[in-house]
Length: 332
Ligand code: WQD
Image (cartoon, rainbow, N blue to C red; front, side, top):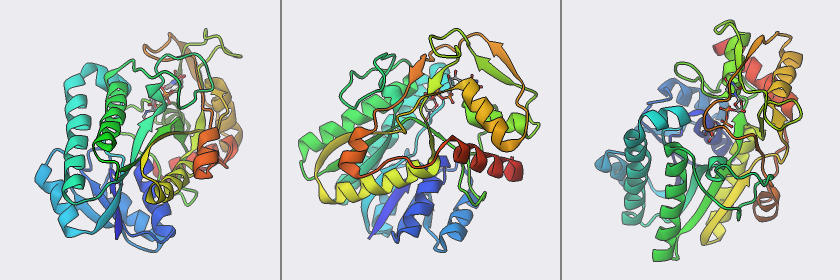
């Protein structure tokens, strides 16, 4: 039996693939390489000492995803595949709804046809919308402020409705806060295409000389230093959270939303200082106006992950920045 990782060659998918292989799971990666490369899969195999099966598949091709289930004995799915740039989703909502929603519907149809009823879904803290009662808890009100966020919220609802129709399904909705860093080997990490949307990949490109300075989007938030506060978590901690979720859904039917975060908030300028301290590189920055859609403060209440999954984030900011810098200076 094998675990299928849709988008398994991507940033979070590749780290999760490597951890799963290392834990003895058989892994099948289905990826269309729209935001990843086949070379990453080779590095995953080198890291784990075992090679995942690889299928170049777009979830919009119903026959293609069906063939994966015919070719391999899939008993559970971790669903990473999806477009994820907030700004791009505002410019191209139809592309986001089609790609993320239709792709998920095709995946669920194939799972149902092949009697595979266990899924871990890559959701996001963005489903807490503009809520202000931090730390966010799983039963807090949900909303979205952009098409990307709406696709995450809609897919959570789709999976809840699938379970309502057949209680043999087991669904884990993992709400990621802010994954950062890279594998400590320096072999895999985040390689954004074009101008990075997210803070830490942008800082890494300033450190490697690809960008002249960081633009800090707003320093007038109601936070200790005026800059946005987020819950940054090492991507390897996030990967281990998926293994815990997989173990849980193998033993339990039903639907569980779970926050994956550290429970600690860190500001933009604190992240700049932490990266400078670890890398020895100066990160010049320019204060810019707030970015539309950004919220002031976002961090997790990670209690449910600890109680239900036995998971807590273990790595601190220093290790996040050190592993990011180690990957960036050798790859970016
Ligand atoms: C973090 C902080 C910015 C870039 C988004 C999505 C979320 C997930 C992660 C996909 C904020 C500030 C950023 C820059 C800056 N997406 N910033 N200059 O917005 O919390 O979350 O990415 O999985 O669903 O919503 O992450 O890294 O973009 O921003 O000042 O060049 O850094 O204002 O305060 P965010 P981020």
